[in-house]
Length: 344
Image (cartoon, rainbow, N blue to C red; front, side, top):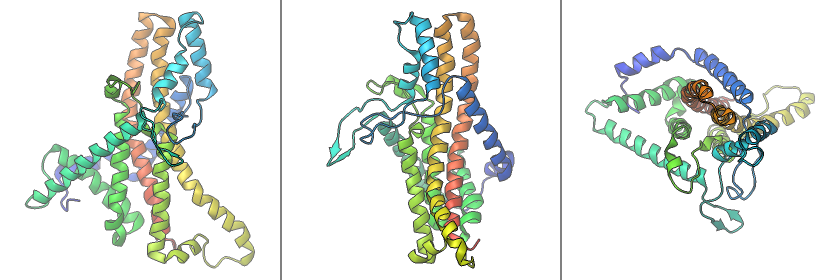
């Protein structure tokens, strides 16, 4: 992290406003996106390929199937391809590109795995370049537009999230993980909006891997492990588990609170999993569903209405991609801070 704070970063911080305002904006954007997804004929559940983790993830909801069935019947008189299946095909993981098993574990390479590798490599190159750029700078302050943008995000994560919520004494240990969460999720979210993977044979349509519950569950498991590790490093392994229940409670309240606290420990990663995957999938289904109206009615006039709506949703999805990366990062920071500052 660069020690200085450039003028562009100060301007951006003033433009973004305070954290409470950002939270209010995130709630409104999430509600709007989910509403659009439902009205467009799809809800936010993604289906993973059978070879993704050796199991079949949850199927799409009936709303998408019913809307797609009606569109397919209208477009092809019952013999045409179901538009609902096409929507599911584009937002889901797809069939494995290469089968790979390590013992009983299915490690097949799928579309989302390829996109995850690409995103991880992109983030690794970006942050490695930024670190070397700051190291070469004589005063430790980055120069250039891209370096200033990266510096702004890292500085904001460090000063406004990690230090207040986890503590200045632990910030150096946890800022790298929190920043990695943000940049990796943001990259996956934005890559899911680009058509580049539609041009690669075998991938069969681009989609965002953060709309896959297997991916978001993996990220949530990392947060869950970080919570236990952070609490154990500060309070000791036994002390961390003792801190789950507030001190000084009467004995008769323990049988009630202990199961609640244990349940809440697993609710945290579950909430992270569902929130990110649901929000990222809803927008993609809405975009494809509105586009399918053109083929449903087979009218240029409908296209004049549908294309601007899709363009607006694409712009909205860019904002949502930033917001969901911020929300996942913020909640992970809060959960780790709760384990570190258990007395609060």
